[in-house]
Length: 498
Image (cartoon, rainbow, N blue to C red; front, side):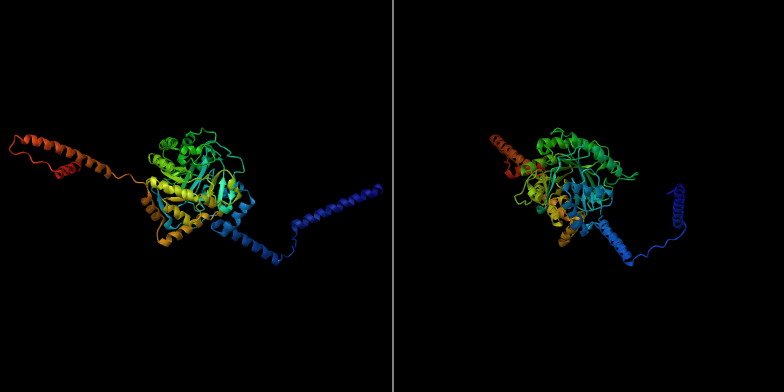
């Protein structure tokens, strides 16, 4: 091809390309293109998918009791993720604000008083679920009246190596050896401060919800000296202003030496230290008062240990006791192969141990010190059983993990059914049990009777002396004095005592 022909071809090519681009741009900007007609079937499918997805989200978000949570979402998490990852994901969802809600107002029969304040229902969530205070409001939205975060240690620590959580589904149990993984005081404190409103007009609970309680569970760093109480004192000083209740956790089996603080001598020193630290706090800018102090104990203590512990508690200013933490015992009826894993066992297998400990402590603590039951509670009947044993309220943990976000509402509904069978209320049931079972001061009349007996004995001795003296003087007198009778002596002694 000649140079002339090549030049003509190039010129024509550029012209065609320019016209094509111009033509395309003109159609796009200045002409109306005709789209293909949309299929009615496709439109219907899109509309159906939108309606169904909207309905499912509404069911998920606005009704925590929905079966989709218990029978779909929770099992999917349990069987597709390892236990710890599933746990963390649940916390993140509740933290995000996209967690489901419990829209139902608590039945009036569930109300009761705790330390003089009205609480809307007796079902709380135990420490261990929200370890770092990430999902406080998400948990309150599920209907819990008591949300307990932690355990929180002064310094951040990773806890024990993974894997450290094991499901026992056939036994409705769980074994964990977390070892207090914690982001530390500073991180959790920043979250508690971030929850507070900019302006506080008057006293309100640290939970920021009427009829609800926010508790912080205090733990101890692994490298801290075994017999030191400094970590707990630091926790009281750090979180006292931002909580309704501080829980002193000396019962985890996964921190070496921790349970040794339950021994009488160590316990006395610990309680004196944390009470002193609490009493030195300035009243909270939120609640306008100081937090309550509660002790959390293990279910593995024998009766003699529990009696000793109760005596120490009576002599302190501790406000309550949580019974109990996980157990190191392994009942013979466990089925799942994970039963041999090291750590604390929770769920249904721990219930008999917790109930026994509640009954023993209730007999040895005054009614003014409430007991909070925890361990193996999954139904309204379980809750009522703890009430009849002397507990003022209960906490859920393992059943919450197995049955999902609707567990709290389901348990409360079952409890209302149980109460309606006898036409009573939670407050009436617990008051009756606590009044009948609680430890009482020895009656002062015993001391008075002892004094009366002593005075009568001394009066009789005095009467004998007077009679002898009268006989001696009567030898020289024509009218000897009449002897004093026993009845007159006893009457005189009674008048002296009165």
